[in-house]
Structure formats: C-alpha cells, structure tokens
Image (cartoon, rainbow, N blue to C red; front, side):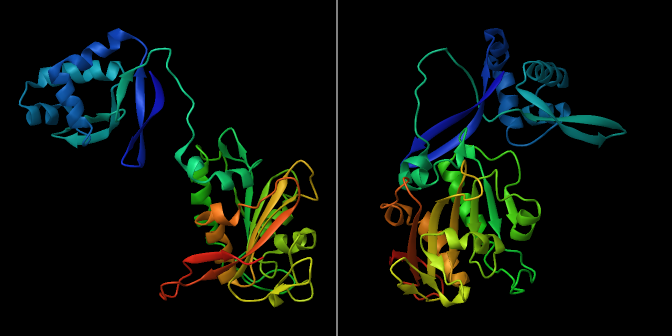
Length: 315
C-alpha cells in the first residue's frame, strides 16, 4: 500500500491525516467484513492483543485471531509491542493508519498549500530558500555563552523557533537535517558559503551578523552596534524595539542568499521576527527581489501586557 496525505477543509480550517492507498482490490475485502471493521475501530483507539479484542467485542478468541491475522497481512494493522500475560507474551496491535482508501489514476489537481496562500509575500521573500517544498538553508543564532570580541551572550536565539514554525507553514516538508547552528559553530565549520543563511540577532551578539553587517543596505553602526541602525541617507533608528529585516546576495557565495532578522536589542529582534511572520504581507509588500533589500520595523505593546504584539514599518 502507498502512503499519502488526506487533506480536508472545513470552516476555513485545513486538516490532514495520513492515508494508506490499496493497490489490490483483494486486499480491501477483509475491511468489508463487519467484525474486521469493528476490530479496526477498536485498534484505532488503543493498542490491544487478540484476547482483549475478543473480550471487548464479545466474540470468540479464534475469530479475533483470524481477522487480526488477515488485517495484518494486508497492512491494515501492525504490531505495537508486547505484554507479559499469564506466563506468556501477548503481541499488541494497533491500526496502521487513521485512513484507508482506493485511488484511481486520474483527477489529480495541483493546489497551493494553505500557508503559502496566506503568506504570498513571505514565500516570495524566501525564494531560493525552498527546495522540493522544504526549507533549504541554515538558521544561525548567537551563542548563549560569552563569545566574540564583545564577550556578549545572546538572548534572542529562541526567536528562531517562532520563525521556524512560520517557515513550516509556507513549506510542505521538514528539512532532512538539523538546520539551526550557533554563530561560533557556523564560523568554525566554514558554513558561511554553500548555504542559504538566515541570521537571527544583532551583530553585537551574533558574530555572523557582524560579519555581514557591512554588506547590508541598512546596517548597524559599525562603531557601536548597540547605537542603532543607519540607513543610506544617514537616518538613525536607535530604539530598543527597532528591528531589521534584510535580504542580500551572500557575498561569499553568489549562488546563495542571506536573510538577516535582527534588532538593536533583543526586543528589536523580536519585533523583526513578528514583522516577518505575523505582519509579513504588510512588511514585505515593497520587497524587490532584483536587488539587496532591507526594511526597519518597530514593535509596540498595544494591549499593555508587557509583550510586543504589533509591528509597523518605519523606514
């Protein structure tokens, strides 16, 4: 049997479950039996061994063994461990899939993933970072221990989790390898070329961001990274809740790109992450893929609960 995903939509909510597709109609016959179907319903709730199934359904144990053996043969149920029962070992079984079906070889249509339809600007912004519908790149965060020329400790690396969840909504598959690295490891492993990069956190606490700062269209003050951001006209953005979202061609590797999501302080990094995720359609509406691009955002606590919940573009 082949494994696929069954996608349904109801009241604007999209859900999916794995489905096993039968290729041989003979394999489906056992599921048409009422007893076998009741066993399937039972084993979809919890794992059980044949004697438990027989007792629960009030059938003979021989019948339970017979149908469970048939269901296992066609791949509808599978072993889920064992229990020691009355001096012997009893094999536990559970349903092998939450859905089963038969598929004809026509009628397939291409549909856009729900996340992609809601975040078209973000998908355009991360063009090149998605390969075969999965994230293709490295996310780099500042090390939490004192490091770099300022012996600083990053406190905004956890914002990578929020960004990673968001990237999961605009792609359809998880990457095959662990994609988050500390800045010190990325430099030591010479990972700054040969990969698309997403650097999170300001250059004062992320040495990779510091490495690329001079190439950014809007950059952090090279004399004092904590003094704020400076655009090409000389305008400064020095509040703690100012954040930068930028995308440039990787100067160390022309075949890849780099995205910088950083703030003057950790609050600014949070503002940039929220801007790139929750407010992506507004923040990225002027994004141009033809040149290096950057925007400054500012976060606000609109409901006065001590947390940034709104972001505006200020550059």
